[in-house]
Image (cartoon, rainbow, N blue to C red; front, side, top):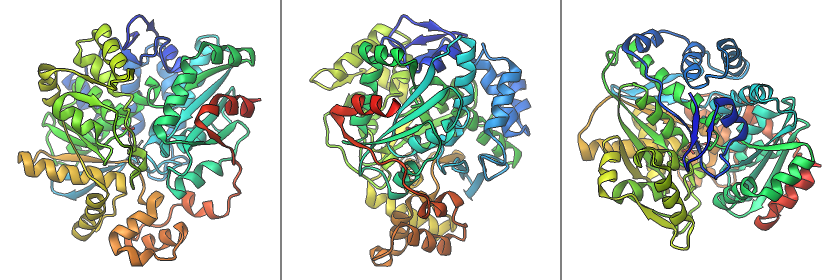
Length: 498
Ligand SMILES: *Cc1c(COP(=O)(O)O)cnc(C)c1O
């Protein structure tokens, strides 16, 4: 299988797409086709371990990696040292046909660990395969969770460095502490005086700048991406849609072949796109429900087919979804355009023009709506949902997952579709203790409490022990203190990488 750019031209191998991250024309790499899983192969995934399922899904996409390489990488990424649950992604049932897939049992307590624990192994192998001897300099823009997950994944990984830009003041206290206390000799963390889109646009500009590449090359470095624009981030996420489905078959909630819906708290559109890929591979998925917070640019897009970015950016209690430019949507647009790269290029040019919008037209919108449904929850709705689910089920949702849960409730009320549904739980509530405790007990309950005291309150309420990754943050020294203006990102980075 080869990989194309959504904007045309490129035809590269899997390992090249992973090594380079973004195509030279600014497009995203997409697989030339979707591997098809026959009924027999689907059935064979049932009862298999997470590691086995991952190896089987990955090898269809990563054709220039050997099966032994993939198995080794998978076992190194997913084990009892890196994940605190032997199932890796345990499935919990809230009510008869509502389930939660807990994707937050990795080193940084967010779903991004699933991909970012594997990616460094894939990148190292890719460097070898392509005879690349420069240092692989991973550049990341983060809305909160990617940064820490990438730092942990690449920390002290030979032949690499990892530099993270985060919106200064735009992430939760715990998220910031997690990043700025990171150890390792090859990690850099830089606060940007702007929002996530500023940071992401800044990093994309670097990738698109020949001068920057020249400077890096002169320093013996090859810039690469660990954001979900990298195909190597996407493909590990395809796996857990299969895992969730098989788990439902195993517990007798569905029979093989029956449709399941997924509701996904969405920002950059990577997680839900992985679900779309799973569906294209033959997994029986009914609807993919796209849940946004108040930054509801995707809700509008799925409603009228117009993507419009000139709007107010809101900081919400689900910061990892505070995004107005959803990069991975481009991969869906490529399919919607019947793989016409010129059309995608045109839409992207319109998006980047002063108009700041494009329209896909009524017919294409109709086609998307057969698979996708979208809605959003603002912070008040999110808070109320955290409390509602706790009161009903005794289960504490983090704010991102609560957005998804709220949207599912709306979906069912509006459509009457009671298909068994999996909510992807993307973060541990402990990463957002203040907002979660406030939602459960009210404003007064957190008066005067710091983030760690809130975590203790949350432990009393939920009965789930505080993860070590949270409690240790109160004693770890802050190692990264650099903050820069948006305009100075390149200079600051080059200084750090010296
Ligand atoms: C990154 C993130 C999301 C959004 O995922 P995308 O792949 O960017 O759509 C949702 N929830 C949490 C907790 C995240 O960290």
